[in-house]
Length: 210
Length: 222
Image 1 (cartoon, rainbow over the protein chains, first blue to last red):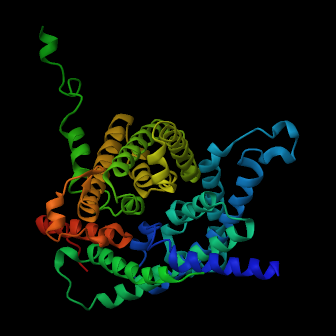
Image 2: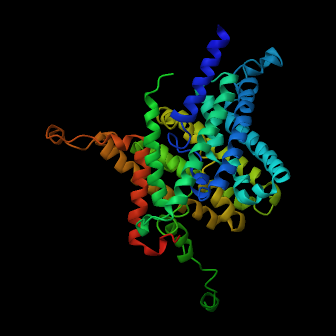
Image 3: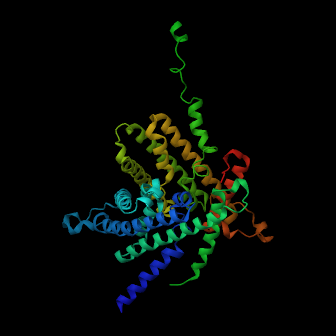
């Protein structure tokens, strides 16, 4: 019974993070690369996959770091005298260190496995380290007090939500080339407006109770 | 007497010369970090439902950009290029931790309202962008000015966005009612669109539209 309950809970976390609390449409996280790499569906998909991968690894890793090292009393497993140590003010710097090293790892993997994708992603692969959605994932995990399994699913879901958003906008922007947009709105302006409209569409998921 | 006259103009350079002033004013319009360089959009949109948190956010970002520019510029000859991103991130996160602790100590309500977005200053592309593009190759004082200028440019945009969102979305400014009750009785309603995330995107789009219609040279050619 309890496993069933847990599974239902995880599904709800996943659906929430993909559709309702979508990184782009609800929190605007990772907008920089979202705007810059969304001119072509193939590159957008590649970056999306990289983001999903990094988020799924870093959120549970940072959960472990937070709950086993940084939180007040978390160090009690080493020695009882450390039970009162509260290192949570170090959370930002530890999170970003984990993220930066994981990104380095992904970069090395992609370079080895798919040099073509590596060339296409170019500068944006190392920049995943400073993609707000990655750090945002870990910070939301901290703020919302997830369990370990929830945190993992949340990382995966946020990544998938981000990927859906960037692939969708890339597809729309490719079509947009043939339309007559007012000159001052071309490029950046119209992309903002389309993102806003997509955000309104995603708001319709708000009514779903899980 | 005579050696005062032959003193070269370089030594008598004023604290804020033409070049230095340009460092501060350029990011306000022609080289705005948000609308032209397209950096730091994430937090620009998320915190702008009200003026007060926006103001705090603008000041925090300005402080972090200016100080990290200064620190990295002082260290620029000692940083090995291969690990520069890690070094930059460490410096920035230390500064952000300081800002976060100060906000928690003196402005707890606003710090709660800004929630994760204070932490996200670390990954604000403006900070990293300025460090890479300016502080790594310039002297400390111009770097500090460049940081201040970009912080102000960012602040100008998010304050404008927040002004319209708060005014149209809840009829208030800085939490004070500005739209008279009589208007509400006459049938005026607050625009709910401004309060939802999508509203921010529309306001920024309009900002860019207006800015680019006045400055034709900024238009994108596709």
